[in-house]
Amino acid sequence: MNRKTLELLLVNYTNINNGLRTPCAEKSKFEKLIKDVELKLKELPREVIYSGGMTALEFAHKLASEANTK
Image (cartoon, rainbow, N blue to C red):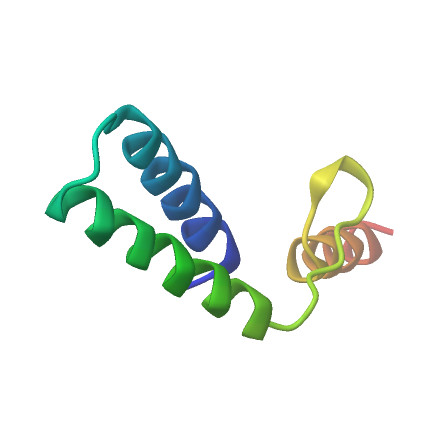
């Protein structure tokens, strides 16, 4: 999974977990899922965001297309 997918999962799992008011099997399940996703995010390499919120690959594509039009 990529970083954005994991970040979305983390937000959704946290929201679901916060919605569960009493301790139960479901709450424990989401607490474990949250820990797992946080660990996976920490293991990913740092993602550099360029101007306009572009990733390195998107920025490289932009630069290449600009160079091709000159």
